[in-house]
Figure 1 (cartoon, rainbow, N blue to C red):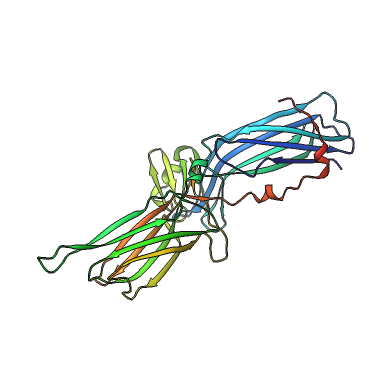
Figure 2: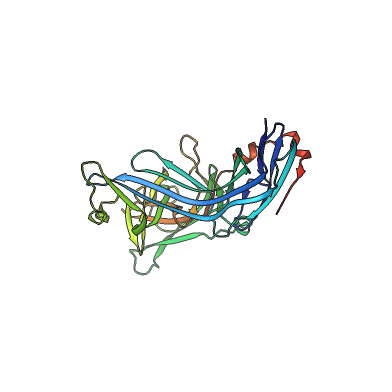
Length: 361
């Protein structure tokens, strides 16, 4: 049986990186294949469907090609290739504008599928049955940002507490939070340091930490909206009020969809402090925040794309015994996607080691 295999030199790349790899072809039976071509796509797209309040099924969608190289001929000749093993090298550059890899599917109402992916498809010329594809994971940060991930800016706030004695200076409760690094991989634990300086008579009675996701889909409203009535007629699109869209608003020419209804709490933890940190300086170090759900499914990575945006933030709330609270937020700069399991699982057969190199590039 004739076999085609494709493998790049790595599974993950930064935007702007050169991707190098090889297509391997082993011919043991007569074939019409006269060479190898590549199709390379880097695509960011979503499709979002839901039923509006007036009973209409609405669909919003957007598709952006960050790279579209089709029918790239690696090698071609006039006659079919003979029996033997062949290797066809290739190379291309990931556009610097590529936002990163992302995959989210939600099957309940509202339904959506949102992906940002890079796929390489190798096909034998004149023998389309010989085809193979490989996905490439694009990281959502630069190499410099990853190298400097421990350079983190803390977030601080001071809650003023007035003294009842006029001759005493007013004091406050100072709260500083800091991630131990800027970049984590989804599925890992975030590590948070919380520094509390309280030299007042006010007690801190509880601490709550929330991990919040901000998921948005962005599209040009004038070109991508469709609607279908579940009843007997289809109204004009302009009769559907934007107010009836679930979690959406206009930002200039773009329609911004918030499929999770806006900021969405995906993890939280509550702890009673019992006044233990009310009158002294304290450092709560290495507070672990999981980047996965209770079933150990990793959370979505961050993405700042043209059509899809996924960001995270922490909200820390300290309740005081004076019917007040202190709230401080900390953005999470980057959550990396999972490693490329497909690439890791590719084991090159022995015959690939002795393939004849053929190239028109």
